[in-house]
Image (cartoon, rainbow, N blue to C red; front, side, top):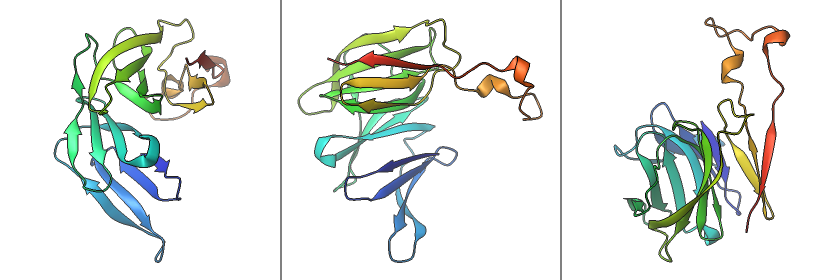
Length: 182
């Protein structure tokens, strides 16, 4: 489940299990359906474009989509770069590009995808980081100014087969990495 907040305070919540989106009705304070599509397989990230005209959606299995907030038109982002758009577990918009954490590809990495002017096609990319020694299922991050901070080692490996937290001597401290954006 991922939650995103618009500048006006509108909440959009994704349900990764059922691949639906919800919003909160401000009058009733209850969840209401917002959007659904059979296109999605496993929603793992959302980010707004500047002006919040579009919502970019990362599907872990299928790639990146763009939803027009006003018309609800959904398109799959074209990819003309020689790079995979799969395995994304967090996505962020920055200066006409999408920053993505990819923990479903090998090697694990953080990638920046450059978009065309229409924001519907990837025209280039750069690898921010890959095979970092601290990587252990990298995951979500945040952009602050011109710096991207992200979790290098989520704690997925910190649980046993019964979903109990492992003893402290088997856990690793969380590592936050940062990258200066241009």
